[in-house]
Length: 562
Image (cartoon, rainbow, N blue to C red):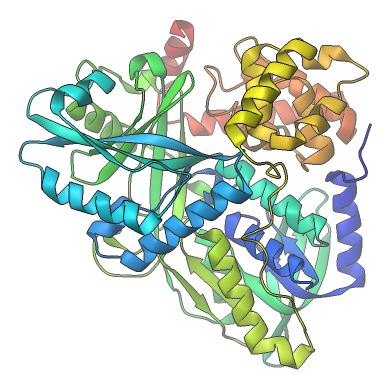
């Protein structure tokens, strides 16, 4: 079964045909959250849009964030009030247009004796934070005594604890937010192609008029012609700018996170705390796991090579041990890691103090570059860039584009009101009517929103597809088919790492399920036995690279204990 609105390898082939036939208003390079947001905004205004991504959508920094939609409390301390205000406004927008993916979550902020930020200062800061937010969807902060803090999080260090605060921000599935934004752009006419690496800009006199690219799946070369080319490549921004002779504008920094079993760090709320060097860090409970991050170090190597090394992991573990009592986690306890490169706009100073604001450059003619920014503000960044392109080039090309509509138009799966009621009712109905285990039923509602019915449609003729893909996972077998048929998952890693979270949040990274997943995807993508085997091998290599900070002996011992 394939639906009329399918988004798969077949639609990808159709998009490549359009590249050969059309000149687009915008050719966007980069399929992370920024490029996705620009594609959606421009397509919804009536512009013709092409987007090229050299890997999978969100395969770079956009799936390697702290997975938070937040105002940035620490930016308030740095007096970046306008950035905080914009971030809080965008948090409210995302709660409205993607309620299935963006969820309020409580944060505990403990205060210790000798802290640079005392309770009074933090109280005033949180009052300002709540005032700037003005949200009815997110609760306001509360102040607690030390005893009350320990009742919520008993593993916190008792010595010197003076009290604390509970405030609220949001968590998000960053890869899926990028994916639904891309899919929304496609629904509005954008031609979006993953695994298409831009090799050069195409000039005509002094103006950029398109890009040359290589299809990474078959090795063929192609051209995408455009009236304006947008560089939205995140940490690869300067690499692309160099092709037009432009000067660098980035200061890339690396941030890593690690994942532990929840039993090793049993938390109820997200805990915001000071690392051993004073930078703000988070420990985030997520089902059976707790993830911790992040580091912030200057990074000069290729973003493609960013990995967590032993020093990064030890820094995070040492920071945990300094704030939580009884935490004896070692590198062998770490289940997985991820590393992302932040495309910060260049500033002097320590990496953590560099602004998270963004920059747009409109030179040379025919090219627009956007760099910096945050996951939270991607939609506003996209609106700003499209506005500037229209102002510069609208008259030249006779564009009569509509105003931005992205703040009021739900993303796929988000067309609902009262998400918690929806999730509870849907999970109960799926449990009773379809016989699904409660965790799987809840996951369908919280992952796909109103589109869960499209997922289940692929299992109507084979109820065996409703079995879990792995014994300890809520991911269903049908999701592998759906990802290939409706979410342009073109490799096994696309599915394991970004359509689901099996690569990061599973005791064996989903390796036990890899063969079944490849077989299921192969029914859609036409993989033979050799191709399935190659997909499995490539995925195993990706897992090995992710866990390379630990020795093979440590990894084997850790898996045996889980």
